[in-house]
Image (cartoon, rainbow, N blue to C red; front, side, top):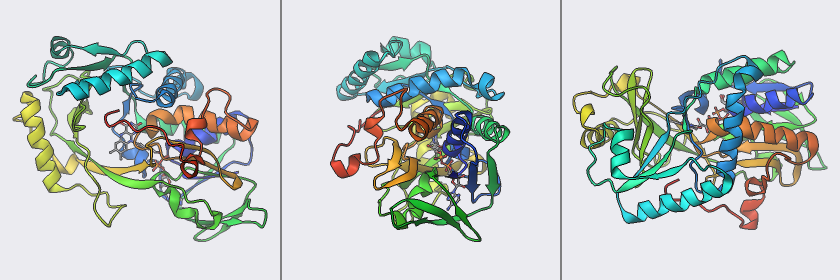
Length: 382
Ligand SMILES: Cc1cc2nc3c(=O)[nH]c(=O)nc-3n(C[C@H](O)[C@H](O)[C@H](O)COP(=O)(O)OP(=O)(O)OC[C@H]3O[C@@H](n4cnc5c(N)ncnc54)[C@H](O)[C@@H]3O)c2cc1C
């Protein structure tokens, strides 16, 4: 079996397959070393506060796997439950957060609670507090270390016999007359195979031509502004998110990271540079909303951008590609991929080895849902 892409999805899938006894696993990645794709650009947030049951369930499964990750792989994944604090500035935002909490509670995330402006001042005293009506807080949300998770799964998979080749650019798939993939084509070689996993992140759709299945995954630029090194905010600051416009911030590696989602660059979907105008805008937002950052400049050299791998309903795409029974997809997590990779890798290994996922009902993630018009609801906030 060939796994395309050795980011966190390919690595998790390979480790879980190897643990299930699958042998002859080969991972191919075009980069020279681990972490060159989205996984290396992730800021390392972990949350279970989502608006759909399937996303909450994926997070709860992932969280339990993060708790045993060090025992399983020998690597500490850095899970640090400092919480996610969502802030509402309108009644509508408050109502949307409350609707999300109802789903979360039904699925078992009972520790996600409504918070008042007073609670918010205690949870994050750095906020100016202006216009904040209330919010949501979940203390078991927080942070993880993306590259540690990648390292743990890659090294673990290799210990279990998987082979890994860097610097190999996959150019396409060869499909036999029966509609099954027979080989992976690369710039220099052709790898005959019994099955394939597409774990190519934002690039997942680029190798699908011969399969007849249009994989609806598109790249979307996400930029991260990093301040100069500072101690104005404590490390244990919760991830703090303005629900209305998505502006959020956290502390990492001795800097404050500021994020604010914007559309990508028109006509250049894979463009992943940092826009100087965006840096100025996000710095102004930070100064207005987090007064202690007023005198902490942005370090443009330490800021970065990367690509989300977005599906039409912003939920993962998991399972065999329609019409191509030996091509498995683990794509489209839409910016939640690091946190969900431990769960999705396990579930895909179940699909490959048992014919279906047994730990969770993953029908909401079925690759055929787009053609069937059975998309998941997309929350504006969560
Ligand atoms: C700025 C930013 C912040 C984020 N923050 C978070 C966060 O806080 N929490 C979270 O859970 N997620 C976050 N994400 C999303 C997360 O990074 C992704 O969902 C996740 O890394 C996807 O993993 P992947 O393995 O599918 O993709 P990738 O890590 O991109 O792996 C795909 C691999 O495929 C390789 N590849 C590409 N094309 C080819 C080819 N033709 N042939 C061979 N190899 C190829 C690449 O080199 C790469 O290694 C963030 C993303 C960005 C950009």
